[in-house]
Length: 367
Image 1 (tube, rainbow, N blue to C red):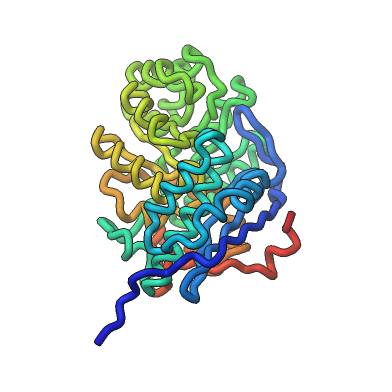
Image 2 (cartoon, helix red, strand yellow):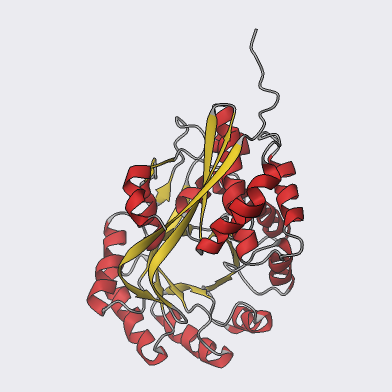
């Protein structure tokens, strides 16, 4: 007779943070940085531990430790929606956007990982899959890169079998077209080229640039104007050149944000980030919204966190294989998946997310 696991009280929730320097100064159209902070959450129950993470400020770790951990300790680890609802209630007076949502994200991912491990199955199996592979695009091409480094990075991804790449624009708009042309020269005529302005352009500036970029074969224009300018995004989506998708949504923290963006018909592709939008739970809810609107969803950054959830999505656009996070995940997690033929495939032989944290390797980055 098989013994069925009926409950597993959460014994404790641990949190730690690590600041990892970039391998080169990085910038986009509106921001510059030289390090990335990883906030790691570990939830323990039934002899198993689940791991979740977000890329956020150390204040996120403080919120997990001081509030969210005690909110879910003692609750059933198999009841992930119940834990999520309890955390959402606990931060009522703090507000959902920003740090609170990223803190919930890290804990929620840890709980999904923990539940799958308690059941001894891969998370992709627990969530259910409509596909067994997730197409990706290589993402980097920072505006701080010299042209030679830009070409080396993007061309290297294409040579490695990733047929889609994205570069940053917007810091110096007058230079953007020349950089796009240099990128095209490096990746050849067949690879798909994406650009991301991070909201650096005005509406008319974005429309003019879109026409020029399309002549160079650009098929994806991300945040041509600030993501809060829904009317501007809608304008560029409708008036921009054929064959160019408008994408935005990475700063969405709750369903209301995504709903407003979809209702405004602001994007061809909605982006959501499970490390920001309240975890895998929030990410899958955003996916349901996009499906109801017949809009494709793409995952923003943190590729190892998103693989299993993306396999469960019907209308999926290629997801972001972001240079910083790929580097960190390969450095600090055993089990980070390597792309094959431009796609990631979840490892069904490993329970949960399929990741284990390399604590000894991470210790020198602890903050």
